[in-house]
Length: 42
Image (cartoon, rainbow, N blue to C red):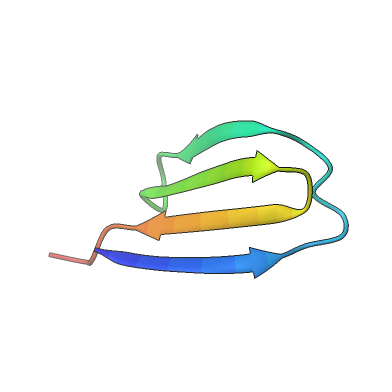
């Protein structure tokens, strides 16, 4: 599992998004602050 944090000025949302194809969970607790949780390839 890999966790990263980024500031993205264009991500003006709050919530969570699951990308099932890439197996990535995006969490946005505050506008523009994105936490990306990736599942390592098996």
